Image (cartoon, rainbow, N blue to C red; front, side):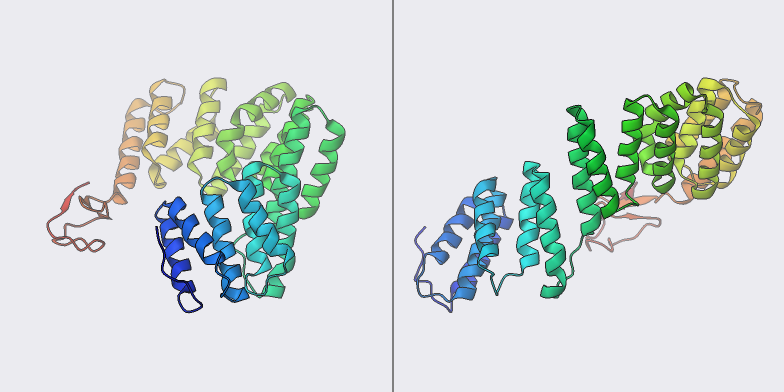
Length: 336
């Protein structure tokens, strides 16, 4: 592509054009535009540095991570007045995440953190939490290589950076599990799921094995019951049903099923697992009582399910409308 002369008045337009090409996935064209802008000798420092930053983003989008790193590092070393250090360091951090160079990622994140106030820029990430993740990655690598003396050091640094990290709790549980210290492993795993119940599906098998090995299955079920009563999380509900099915029911589980089916808005999978538990006769609930509870639970579920959706954009709604309020097309509403 032949470009007309680029001067200080048209440079910004060409930079925006290159960005547009990159956003559309036409990275080669974006590279050519931004390289052409940088090659002009009649541009001021601000325009060249902005074009360089855009070129770095082009290289990153093209998967040319070493070249992107070189561009961003050059901008960082030049103490650019026009591109914030926080933005440059964040771009470098993203590269190091891709290449799994965790020590460099820590340095880049620390750079972003230090530059935040200086550049008066708000970052949309928590630097301490990120650094903790990077130290956990290093600890994972050391654990896989059997370098247990390094693991402790990385864990200490991760804890210092962000001690509330559920990733850290999980890692500490994994180390104890690896060393067959099942009570300690269980303590760390349960602390993690108390903070974030989403981890339960990932940790369930290790929690079950640790609980059996430590003779703590009853106490684990008690912890999960308290957790469900506090958070009403369906994953906890389903795990309690799984444990009851494998190791025997209890009055507490029957009460849980009755309460959850009659009052909570469960999803279809949870309702199915509860009805399956009742059907197998493992509960003191009768089939008739169970059927009534399932019927009541389905009614609770259906209260929140939209009856219609737009065939054009997928927008969901409870009532039929002639015109979709999202995409504004007419006569596109159908049953969900």
